[in-house]
Length: 158
Image (cartoon, one colour):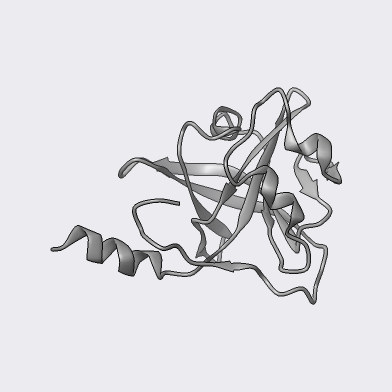
């Protein structure tokens, strides 16, 4: 197998863009994700690939409520804060309009929709951990907005 050719083809697999966010002791953390997928109807479960170096990893894995904020094409300005990561001392959440749900989830007001989740299981098959999370609540914020779809130039990099 030619790994470079395979990586090019893998990069053609479309995905959405998401801001995965968590609040830990009042400090909001999060990261830009694209590897999110539904994996069960009953119960409603999703999978998320996460690198342990991502902001919020420890809080998410400890069982805290976290959110998957679905990016819509109607508002993508806040993505710039997450493209290349950020300095924890300069939280992008301080620059964005967000609320906290009753369960402690970070809800970005400019998202298309939001899934509130808790980790149910995980596996580490490679350089990213796959989290299986149960959806415990959801919020539709911009019903008619198209979902932002993303492809990559190569499957070897974000």
